[in-house]
Image (cartoon, rainbow, N blue to C red; front, side, top):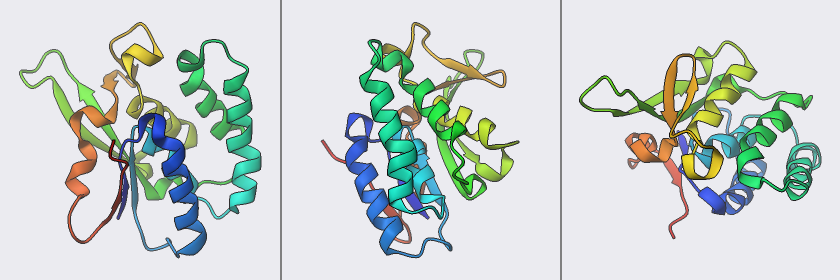
Length: 178
């Protein structure tokens, strides 16, 4: 298992590490989990396309789109969703996992860790919606305190530290410590 923990605004550094790993190591026998910003970055490990193709067709358009927006944070998740969903690059999303923070106001323990397996998603669009849920930070991305998808409320996956269950000596973990 390769676990990509939350990186926040340092996600670009994690992006570089991810591209290096995918270009220099055989990842076909690894399962990959990403949480928060890592949920988007891990997608780059789930394709056989070259780094040049990924940079040209996904990374550069995202950066251009973001630089043209006045409301960067509010539109960032939609920009990521559209960029990944509209590309012709094939992602093996069914091999990836997404760490989420599920909230339920009707239970005593309102915040729960949840892992979505790519193989449980209906399609790539469903998978991308869970990536949005994993990286939703209320102050940055909207007026609501949560995002709702499939009748479930979510916050940024970092809050429940859903990725930590994978942190043992048998797994490859990379995260940015600030």
